[in-house]
Image (tube, rainbow, N blue to C red; front, side, top):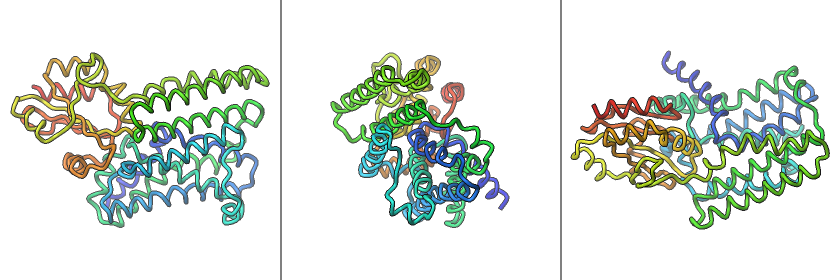
Length: 391
């Protein structure tokens, strides 16, 4: 029981850290609007909004726990469905267009009536954030999920709800603290430009989740259209203002978000590319060949819808020290693509101790696991594992 209590605390911490992962980025505009709407509200309204956020988060994570227990789903497996990806992309695009138009997120009035005081918006904000969190795992989450799959259904439900509590916790604390809400800046022309900029973030999220299901030739056109939209909006704001604060918004946004553009568009390199590992598609035959050749192996589990995987591929796997270690150890690099449903690959993920992606494993020259690498990990950890596997 002590181990279970520890895992619950780690689950709350893992859920809170999920707010810092790139996956949850498209949900931030909706949450910010919900929180700014609570500025100046009474204690009852704020606590009601906090409860609605938690209810939305728990609705999704409770359903995910039932699926994990009854249907044996893994973390993020929901996003292997093209219907889910395209449906989420459509929702994000609609929300993005509404934000760009200055309308914000307005649920139907019938939903407001159900909430009595307008709690539909925070409920849907919590639900959307929970949904967006599942393509990626963050620090601590891999271990928590690996522990959960070995427990009875009641424990699985408790762990998933604890993850949801952690995900909602920063917003619950903010809504429960009048002093913090009072420090939020009041609206003005600049805040309308911020909402429009956050609409671009929502559009980018929609483009990212739609890209895996588009023809290869259509992906550059999709990102080109988004870049044209963002450039046109930035030039229009610089021209229209109406003041310097408003004109500064596109400049600040460009500086903050520009590094994410190549990550979102990245589709990974292949053999022969000088700045990337020589990835080959994973197969059991390729694994056996590497063992027969007495070579260490790095296996990466990834998917086109996993933003954190893209960040790892650009910041860790392409690091010069990793490329040098791979050359010096004659490393075999195999990539497992979980973009679509692949039961055999999912079984391999579980067999090696993974519970979600990103996940990697380093095998020595005899095929024995040297290092499991769940979640995000530093370059130094991977480099040390590669050299240990060789020697």
